[in-house]
Image 1 (spheres, rainbow, N blue to C red):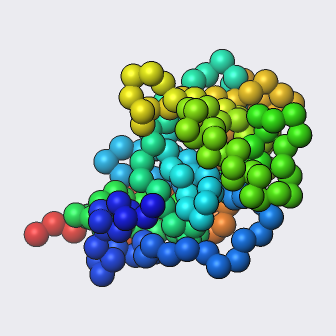
Image 2 (image 1 turned 60 degrees about the horizontal axis):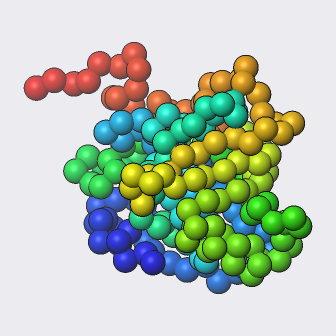
Length: 207
C-alpha cells in the first residue's frame, strides 16, 4: 500500500519519513490535515485506515459551510509517521514546497447508527466499506475541524471526491476556518518554515 509513496521519493534528498508500519494500535483512528505550498497551495487531508494514511489533496481547503463542496483528489497512501511531518521538501523532489501540520486529531466513521467509538477493527471495516462504495461519513475531533463530515466520490473519475461539512452544531457558514493559518504542533506558519532568504520581506541574493 506504500509502494507508490516510496517510488515517488528519494529519501536521501527529502526529509520526508520512509515508509513504515506502526507497531502500536490505539483504539482511536487519527486524522491529519497538512497545509502544503507546492506548485499550488492546497491542503492534504489524511485519514488513518489499515496502518496507512488514506490521502486527498484539497486545493481550496475545507469549509465549515455545509453548502460548500470542495474538490478532493485522492493521492497515494502515506505512512502514519507522515502525520508529524513539517518542513520543506527540496526543489526537484516530488511535492517540493513547504508543509505544516494545519490540524490533527481523532475520528470515527459515523454512517452506522452506533459509531464504533473504541472499536478500531470495526471502525476500519466500516472505512474499507465506505472507500469501496465511494462514500465516507466521519466525525472528527481536531483542534480546528470538528463534527461530522462526508467524502463522496464523483462519477467522473475514481480519484475525484467531494469534501463537505454536515449540518451540525459545528457548521458555521460565517467562519473562514482557513484564516487559522498556524500549525497545531509548532505554532508556525508556512512562511516560518521557509528558508530565511525566502521569507517575506527578505530579498533573495542574486548573482
